[in-house]
Image (cartoon, rainbow, N blue to C red; front, side):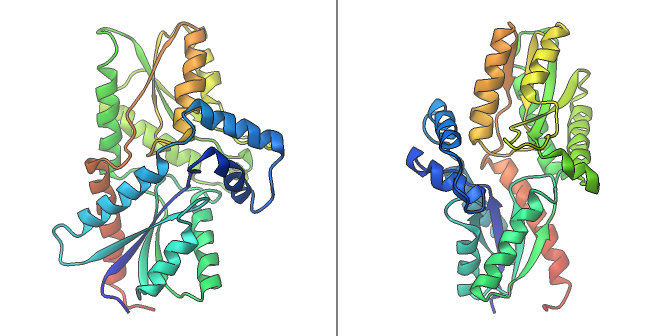
Length: 313
């Protein structure tokens, strides 16, 4: 048993090289190899953004920054482990490290603010599977969502405010908040994901006093089932049809730079805007910034405090 509280910080993962794309894609598909044309398409997307994204480095910097922040001024001690859902270091590796160090409790935190049974819950299923495989019995204290945490909202609002100032004075800018699309079937089970996204968007819009804003999904998967919309590219065209000349994209559903940011927004949405003569900019991502990491530390401390008030199981 360890007196140090564990923290399992989780992110999606991203391949390190183009040669890793097929293995990465296969893991996403639960071990089923994707069709060669799908692998080729994904490789082309990575080539378009330079061959890889900085998600691995950003996630590790967030891990180390969070551990330092948690241990900076409190009597309670923390050890933060990084586990990726679909790439190295896998969630199973992180669970094994926690077990080997003797942790009996750990806060589980996904680097995504909004809860869905299809997304966030999936991370914790991976944790459960890892524990069963490894014979581990760590009590995981899940943080299901933090979409209205004041520090998160302020961090996004600050970056939105800063980027708005980059448009010419007097410009009528429409802010488009975005998040990863999910299959529409989540609506059949009253999944909180769409509601939480609207709550985040409305909260930030109110903080900034925005008059012109909307919400859009992005990065829908390639499956026969319909996905939540509208898509960001369709939204760009719709706004252009309405005479909008300036768009600022604020990806509230994401915290780090990865393919969905660099390709779906910086390339695809930007190309659509350019084709219509619209100026499109994107806010700076939170990544491993000090204000964002400080907010994550607050989220972890709040969850840990609830657990410390109860006996271990």
